[in-house]
Image 1: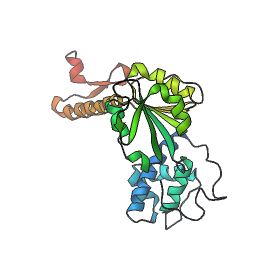
Image 2 (image 1 turned 60 degrees about the horizontal axis):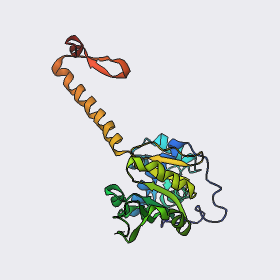
Image 3 (image 1 turned 90 degrees about the horizontal axis):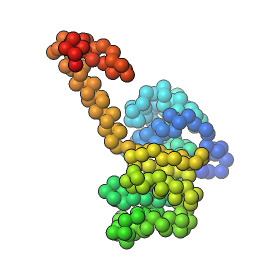
Image 4 (image 1 turned 90 degrees about the vertical axis):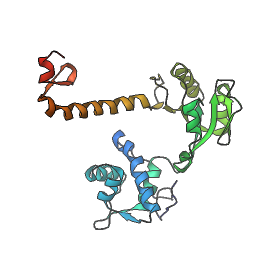
Length: 255
């Protein structure tokens, strides 16, 4: 959470209206801007140019300026953006002015690691409950929290005002867990299980599949290796069905 409050910043009376309806691509980039801004603030910077912030966030400056214009932030010519004020604005839009309670279901290897991660607190989230169906894990203490049986979810959700559910179970159990979360009123789910969840309209699901991300990186490695090999073979790239490509040397030998 931001410690860089300014007069007139979001959260103060009359400062900012209800959060705007932003494009999904903009919403996806705001956390990157926020991360970069916190790093700048921690380093003692009070202002930053659009180019400087764009470089720190890994986007081009035109895209950043357009994103921030949706928030009503245009910077000051010759000065740039007020770092503290922009932190406040982005945290307000992202709903980080209140710490949200999270229930983590599934405390296997991945869930255990997530439960022990200290970075959630500094980003505006509180892991309020750990739940699992494995009797051998019930009662285990992780980062100050005791693992409870998933059947206690209704009570936990009411006691802790759970707003977000994180699923870190094996794929076969994930849908049932999602159904339980929806049943107790959770409408935002982060799914680490390698499967697609079916949820009612109005429930938002974000999926994190590490294997898919590695496969995408593997594609890029394969592509770079193929391009690097072209001068040695004397081949040129030609299209293949499905949008892939092969060298003319490969086609000639039937591979």
